[in-house]
Image 1 (cartoon, rainbow, N blue to C red):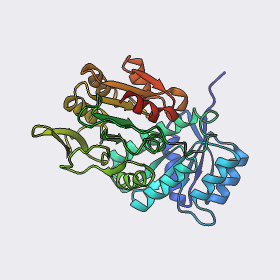
Image 2: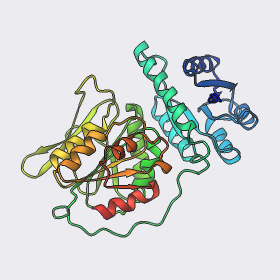
Image 3: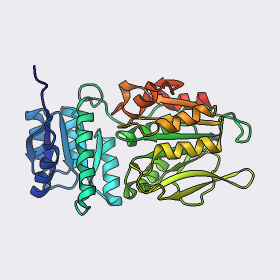
Image 4: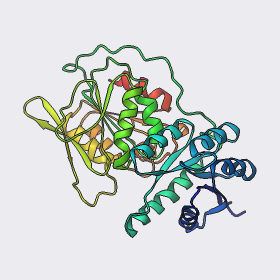
Length: 350
């Protein structure tokens, strides 16, 4: 029997965008568009009648917007939804709200890009459609952010603790996963964190602000020259590479640049983690969360080679079991645990 195609529903008030998205995803023979809707209300109706495998969802639409439609669909017929978001701070905030309502991931609406960038957007969209479709009956029936009791307090000295730095990497499905982990860390931790996620520059500032509101630890978007501070979480800005560098005898700071120019990911989890491993040999903890591809594998390898510890999210709770799988398959994970146990494991391993 031939494998069934992945059935996609497109929800967008722009006829042009509906046409572009359809043309993009149907270049892959494994995907077919089974319907298109002009607003959220029509999108809900078609989602319930067509039962698609994946939905692409615009945010701003008449009659019913993408947030309202996402909430209804996730309540009545949970389906992987990929939000189509504008590259603005407002678009970022609405996207994160949609992820809270159960959306699987997002893709940027950036049609002013070069033909090369458009090819990258097409590849990203097809990859995400395929990845999230495999989770339809396993992950997306879950509502997203569910508060849990805080973890026990941590009373370790920044100068004497065994783990001196935690580096976290994620990609597809990463915003929800990172929010889940960081928001459940206790507020008296003294370990600094660096979080790298494949996210456009327009989104990382808004994401850092959102995390700072939800977390007991301070979260900020990393900036050139920032000193590493105890108990602070730095989020790497999109579109650049972020490294930790030693400054003076005992201080460490953030270095942000565009090197290497030809890097596939900006930020690259490998580059972030490698710099942490070099600065904190034997005292670093690498954590790899949901995402496509294998970015982070070599960074985790170096952390282990230098005597540090590693932690990977398990397959069952990943939106996409790509980056963690690469680490696990290479034998580089000290522990493999569900998403809702990772915050506790970080505290335990520190």
